[in-house]
Image 1: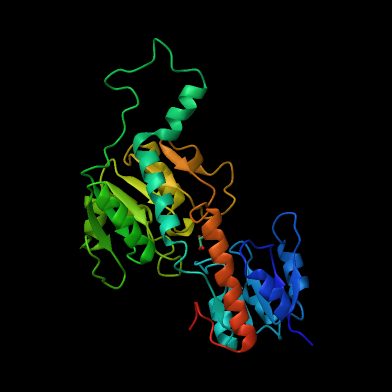
Image 2: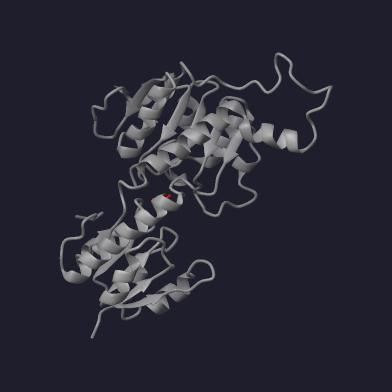
Length: 319
Ligand code: DGY
């Protein structure tokens, strides 16, 4: 009898067909994302789950699935999975690092530029018919913040942080970097977190969300940021205290923010960041290109295939 695997969403990419041959694949047909209650029901009796970052694989679910032998997530981040619960049972967790590095770095830079130069606000202004003879080019009209020559602070010097640093070099930025375990990166001056916060005109976050990084940018650290600085977050919302960030923007202590990720997603319409000035937002689209999503899906399938064959998972998040 073929092992049963739950696939919580239809996947792009070419390799999902191989998975269909290798196991009894239970695919949630949608529409939309698989609700948690149905995830628990459908996963019963499954040896594996191939999930998205929107699926919560918590301890209660893991404990309720005695046959569970692997989880493969189509994401690099695994903060939606109770890794401790998997580790306690020796269950490997696959994830998809590498392929989304450049795409996510592009998103970070797009938000950085859009926030610095008020691109979204300017677009809305033109479309609303506000660009009139009385309200047009003048010395102070739509002035923003220069990127060229500014200092960029990168929090987290993994692959995505390094890719952002390469982009910053092309814009003539001075690049500072902080990593929990110090790391030498070409073109990046390693500094303490205090120095990074105090000296950066732009701050871009590239750490995974875990207990050590939750609320890393709390109210005290936000207060340490250089006056007028711009914060870019394409990592995870839980790394930043959203209320403190919104307050700093409203009070004009920070200049702007580009935010792709929120503590709770989808973001609530009354989230204070949506009312703060100079904030460019996006709905967690860091890795959202067709090619990257297909590559992520293919890696997630390869991780699942390896687990089904009893081979080590090529991209294992809990080795
Ligand atoms: C991930 O894979 O963790 C990213 O957040 C997806 O965009």
